Amino acid sequence: MTYTRKDVSKLTGTERRRFVGALLELKRRGEYDEFVRMHVTYYTPDGERGLRSAHMTPSFLPWHRKLLLDLERALRRVDPSVTVPYWDWTRDRTATSVPWTDDLLGGNGRPSDRQVMTGPFAYREGRWPLKVGVTDRRYLTRDLGRARDPIALPTRNDLEWALKDGVYDTYPYDSTVTKGFRNKLEGWGTGRGSASWRNHNRVHRWIGGTMLGGASPNDPVFWLHHAFVDLQWIRWQQRHRAHRYLPDKPPGVGNAQRGRIVARHEKLPPWDVTPDELDDMSAIYRYV
Amino acid sequence: MVVGVGESPAGGQRGTPFEGARSLGRTRREATRRLVISAVAVALAPAVAACRHPRVPDDGRQVTSFEETYRGRHIRGVEVHPARQAVGSRWEVTIDGRPLHLMRRADGSWLSMVDHYCSYPTPLAAARGAVDELGPGEQLHDLAPGPMGGGSMHTGDGHDVHA
Image (cartoon, rainbow over all chains, first blue to last red; front, top):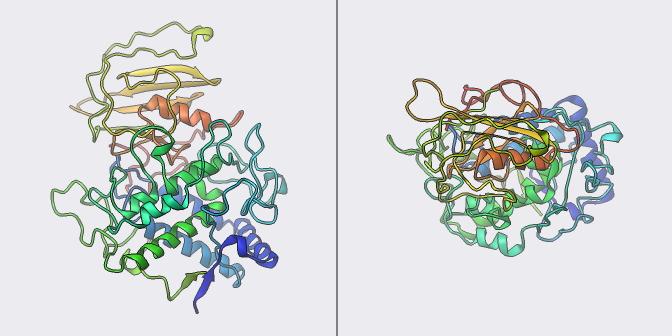
């Protein structure tokens, strides 16, 4: 049975409450922190050895699609009515719009230490202590818009720039490529300054705090952000029907990217699934 | 934790580092901006993304170590050349004595575990970027070898990473 993922601004009060409730319950059971741990563990940048399955790689999109699907399955075991909503950051662009409301994710961090003080995920509520991370900080932090050196969220035009590229990804399939839909959406740029991060990366930067680190899924906005990124992949597929995930075959012997990236029909660690099998989700969910 | 940065894929940060870095005095007053030696000025790697414009003279000079107090935090970094290895080196970087895990991008720039979605032209810049994101009193986990106390499950070489 296909379910729908909705725009977070369109959720009813009951839907908001049940989504938040399912997240808090997963956290209480200890299941949530496994998703955070997974994200930290699989962050292999392209200047290091090893297979890149999650970032700076063609499988950035299917890897996060699968992580999101697993989180959503866990949420639906708690409450079968829940799906992961998406946050359209081209529309809801301020620090007080959704999802930064008290009935959803809570608001910005306070100036002194960026600690989130409002909403159900505030540390003082006692239900969202950070357990997996790179520092000893136990509370959620945000710095929406980066107060000391403000930046803006990506715009509709920024997304369009990525969506109109008819090629999924190009060699060497890493953070240095300047062509191809995948990196234009993932957002690794060249040069200096704020123009060098785009779309997906720029949203992490705009939120700041917890969302900047390797343990970024500690902030539940991670899932709303990645649902919207996932929706862009579907939009791109609909616009470029003759084009698909690349590379379709593993790089050959002697190729510098051999063993570093996941081709269309190769297993995508840590799962027993290929990018090809994650290409079409229409039998499982759709976006409305 | 040993933060390793191995052979430079882009070659931009290599150069010939000076050996025998001169150690400067340890007066706290002078500590801000103190670089324990910098040596050869080299052009930076061609495509280096930075998250913000450097406000201090972290301009890509080839350094073999650095030490400074930045925004009240003690940053140290040492480039380690493993024995019997013709090329390649690692950077061990600490903030207030706790190891900062640095990783390398293909364009030669650095990412830290604290600031994962931007990269910086040098290990010092990455360390300062991490300090910028640390809250008052917040400290890095002093765990080895990785942030979870475990290695990278897919490469099996822990966080003793090499480029």
